[in-house]
Length: 376
Image 1 (cartoon, rainbow, N blue to C red):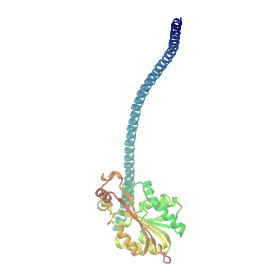
Image 2 (tube, rainbow, N blue to C red):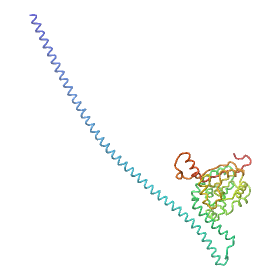
Image 3 (cartoon, rainbow, N blue to C red):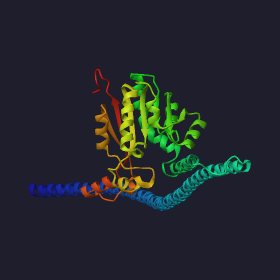
C-alpha cells in the first residue's frame, strides 16, 4: 500500500514537472516569438532607414556631380574670361604703345616745325631787307649771330626729342624741392638762380612751390619760350651774369646738365663766382651725366654735340671741396629700367648690370661754408 502511494506520488511529481516544463517552454516560446516579432519590426525600420539614407546619399552624390560639372564649366569660363581680359589688355597696351610712339613722333614733328619756322623767319627777314635794299651781304658778325639763332633752334629740337617731356623732367627734378624748402625755412628769402635754365622746367616747379627764382640761358629761343610761360628768364651768359651780382645776393644756385658743356677754366671761374654771390650756408646743386655708367660715359653722353667731356663724381667733389663747399652729398640718379638689365642674380651679373645699367646721372648737393659754425 505504501509502495503504491509512493509510485502514485512519483507519477504525480513527474506529471507536475512535465506540465511545468511544458508551460515554461510555451511561455518562453511565446516570449521569444514576441521579441522576435518586435526585432523584426526594428530590423524593418532599420532597413527602411538605411534605404532612406541611401536615397539621400544618392541624391547628394547626384547633386555633387552636378556641382562638379558646374564648377568645371565655371573654371573653363573663368579661364576664358581671363584669357579674353589678357588679350584685351595686350591689345590696349599695344594701342597705348602705338599712341605713345605717335605722340613722341608728333612732338618731334612740332619741334622740327618750330625750327623750320625760325629758318623761314630768318629767310623772310633777309628777303625783305634785300627788297628794301637795306642789306646785300652779311657781315661776319651778322652771319655768326644768325648761325647762333639756327643753333638755338636746333638745340631746342634736340632737347625736345632726347631729354624728355616737360612733365617727365619736372618729375625728376622734384627730388630737389625739399632741399630748397629746408634752406628757405632756415635762412634767407633771397632768390634762387638757375644757371642754364633751358626750357624752364625747374623754374616752373619752383614757382609752383612759391619759391622766388629766376634763370639765365644763352639760348635765345628757350629764353623766349620761358618768358612766354611767365617765367623770369634772362638772355645772358651764366659766368658774365654771376660777375655782375653783388656778394651774398643769392640763397641758392642750381644748374642741371650744364657743367659738362664748360671748359674747365670756365667751370673753375664759375665756382669762384658762385662762392662769392651765395650767402654763408647757401645751397649749390649740380646735376650732370654719370660716367660711372659705362654706356653713358662711352656712348649716350656724345649724343649732344655741345658736350665737352664727362665729369666724374670724384673730380667734382674734390673741385667743390677745393672751393670751400661743405656737407657735400652725392645722389646717383635715373638707372636704366629693369628690362634693360642682363638676366641673372650672381655677383658677376650684378656687377655687369651695375656698370652698364646703373644711374645715368648724378648730382652733388653742397653748402657754402658758413664761416662761423661751419656746417657739419
